[in-house]
Length: 542
Image 1 (cartoon, rainbow, N blue to C red):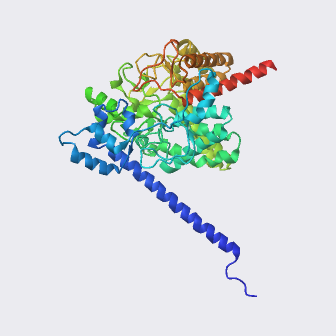
Image 2 (cartoon, one colour):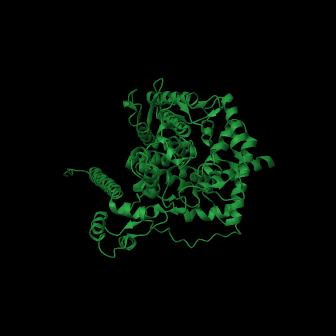
Image 3 (tube, one colour):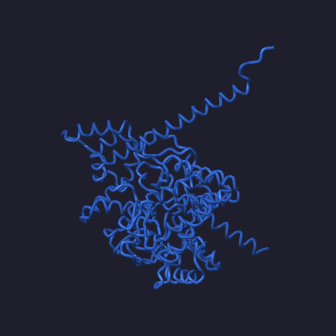
């Protein structure tokens, strides 16, 4: 009997090879298509039409227009505008409505039921705030392959650092599959773009947000070594994004991108943005601030964008004069929180390499982490005021602002006990209010300043207290915060983006937009805190 020239296994192998090549080609084509779409929108944000619409006041919120979906190609719309704008009777608003679809939040039929308690309300909100994988094409939205939770209100997309705190709540509520999907979305963005943008929108691709990806990986994968190490390439790639240009730093050129060279050949990091023009989603606000105050445009726009990358947009932390936004100087500042998060990233990369038995690489990142830890405890420690402080590297001095960022080194467990006692005293004496930890002690009118407080900073603060033995105080802070959440919920039927912790009878205010409800990270922190309190009660009863 004649043997076949190719056996069955060879056919299978050949088929798999062809399918694999085809899938890779499709993936590469999709990547190029998404890149081109992002570039098209970035070009549109520089257009005369875009500027005219954003400065016209057609939309009360600058974010509305950037979330609109063009009905045809952006270039075609721009050409139509140039042809029509000088015609008699031209109406800009009608032109926009003709060529763009206004953004809509998905219709859910959801209505708040005040008869539910706050936690029942949050449970009912998860599906309302969840988006299935994106199918919207030809818009500023960057499609994601898996389901995710949005903050709510005007925030119709995923947000980077928000999501860590949302995921804490998802995990506590047993919604592990959705939390995993969100983690995979961020890994996808790192693979696609080389970093995680502020949110999955074209107009956010010049910047990231506080790097919580390693904490997400640590939280979601727990002690599953193979799953943890599967995210190691993305953690390394994110680290490279934050350190880009660090190998070219010199005394003559001490700051490149997000890396800054300090005395003693120490490299720490700052917030930054790749663009030096108004934020598209806050175009009018940025444009007017810069032009009305005759600021140096490129520098001011970069500082505004870097402030947005910090997540604290905006706070007196970033101002030379705490009450004057026009003195914004974000890129001159080495922030406590950013460098603590990068320390954590270095530690987790080292852990990943250790688990893969690549010990040379593990030791390299452990050395990086050790250098950063020592720098945080020296350069970012203000001995006179006895707390961690942001550092202005251009002036070689600490800023004057006491903020909840001072708790981050305790959150990461890198603070010596003597320093920890001083920080906790500052937190208790100056930052703890009736409703929880206030963001800063400065009443500037900015939303990340007194009297406002935010869920993520409560979580950071409470964990910092727990890490250094202040369990009773940590539990008290949780009680204060959750009681305020409940009080506002009972009054409004809503979970808010931020809260007034100094006068708990008033709502929070300040910032570039009205108070938003929803709200992803508030819900997440509330559920995660409730789980801690329930577990403590269970132990007490036993």
